[in-house]
Length: 388
Image 1: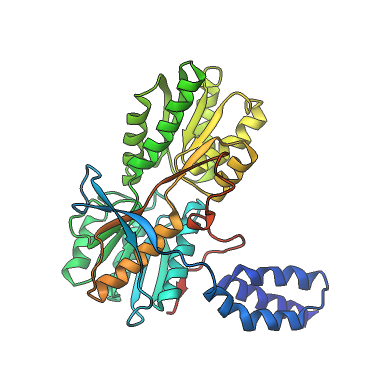
Image 2: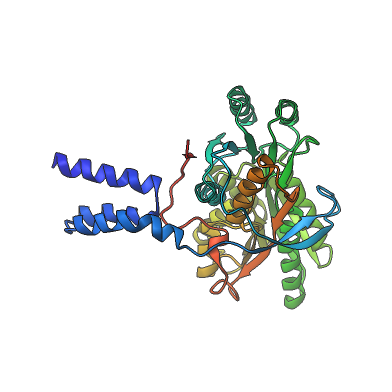
């Protein structure tokens, strides 16, 4: 029995470090299936299977021209990454948390692209959008090690500006990933405009309102106040719904953890359930709302929308509980961020502000779109370093 436990533990370790295919081995072994030879076979062929996966490029992207312009002036380009990095660069990545499965897709994209390029990468998660002090400390500690580059998914739009400047002053480039940094000292940005994300879901709701032929009342949950992506998403959503007869009867800001969003949703429903036609918000908001409306017997009357994508949102749309959500192709944003940083370090041409194009998903196209652009593979677990 002791030997069996050790074997299962070894397989579990492999599962965390490599492809999700290994995860199935643990279940098979526990069921008593004799798969030792099959296990050896999988271990031998796994590297070639990974290499045989469909390439994520060439990819149509938006390139901000000029970079970082707030009017969202963009050119359409085709993105092709490096084949391999020239050396094993040491990159440090900082993300808000992993409570929201959105960031699991980011984690996968970062790790898999670092593996493909052959660079070293370590990821630090702060624990939530209320943990700015933690993210600051993580970055400060990392700067003492003098890594080659930093990639930051920021908790705060301007709360890291001094640290970004400190990094730039000692020759360490900083890439702004997804969330938005107000610092003028960033070297590049790999980030879809969350104004587009909010605007896309607002435009979808406006079209729905016109088709229904009656005014709609909605509750709006933009996310944690103070984050750059939240301010942008809020502005885009509010702009889009001016084209329809839509009234926001409640707006609630909060951390994108399930407990925090559930509390906010319950409070709004206690006050406005009788008049609400739709709930719109973060992916965590949408996921939590599905369960809450079902429990309250309101699932058939109140529609649910998310303004970004996650595995739970994907399931909700497939099952009919969630109406629609835009995807910012999360995995591809992370891949682009890693490649852009490698280009910066190797002094090669790179786009200073680049991102994939936003796609709206609903029941009409969910069966045909490529979810690998956005979601981590099934069974993927967080990995915090590679090639270190």
